[in-house]
Image (cartoon, rainbow, N blue to C red):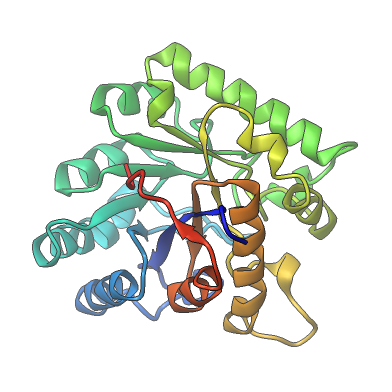
Length: 271
C-alpha cells in the first residue's frame, strides 16, 4: 500500500431525530457539539453537520427546522474548535448561506443543485467549497428512480451535467467536490458497480468524496448500522487506492486504523 495517499476523513454529525444510523442520539445541541469534537479527536478533519435525514423514504423538514438544528451546533463547534473545518449537509440555499455565515466552509449538497434552483448561484456568491452529489429525486421517492442500464456510465454522465451547470453558474471548478451518491436512487447492485469503478469518477477533474458509511448495500441480514463499520472501513481503503479525496464516515477511529496499515498521509490540505 506504499505510495497511496490517505484520503481526508469527513465525520458524520447528524442532528436529527430520524437519521437511519444515529437518529436522535445527537439532536441536543450540547451533545452534538461534544460528539463533533470527539469525531475531530478521532481523526475527522472535516465535521459534516446535517439537520435533515436523507435515508430512503425520509420526509423533508422545513428550512426553519433544519436551521434551528444545525446553526447552533456549527456556531458551538466554531467557538470550541476555531481551526476545525466545518461542513453543512443541506439541499437548501438559505441554509447553506446561514451555515457559511455561522462558520461552515463546505456545503455538502446531496442534490447537486437540483433540489433548490438558488443553490448553485448561492454557492458561487459565497465562494465556499461545494460537494455536488449525484441525485435523482427526494428521499421519500428516490427508490422509484433506481433504474439503470449502465449505472457507472449513467451516474458519471449525470454528474458531468451537474458539474457543467455549477461551473456555468460561476463556481470555480477547484472548489467543487463530486460524489457519486452511494445509496441515493440506487439499488445494492448499482452501489457495488460504482464502488468497483471509482476511477470513472476520479478522472473527471474534481476531488471525489465517497459516502458509503453504514449504508444498506454493506448490510448483512439482521445487522445494525454500527455493525457495518468494518465494511465501511474496507470501502474507505478501496476508495483510497482509487485516489479519492475524502471519505465520509460515522466511525473515524476504525477508518484511521485501516489507513494506518501503510497509507502515506496526503499533505495537500483539507480545503
